[in-house]
Image (cartoon, rainbow, N blue to C red; front, side, top):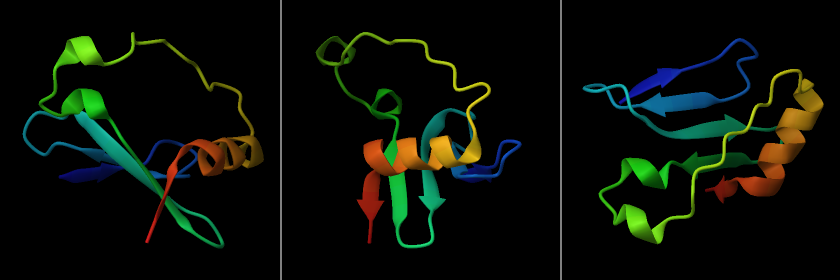
Length: 77
């Protein structure tokens, strides 16, 4: 497993150390840790997953980014 941070360094993105596939990400706020996993990286039936939708967060302010993640990501103990 390798960790990578993009330009804003707002989260640690977890990549497979062998193939570089995005596996998930972790973020620490002032209060909690949050995480998200890329289920498409797991060995699941792809037919059971929703269709991929491309999204761009380019231009998103840091406060907006953190609020979006806190709302959508899973709290981590």
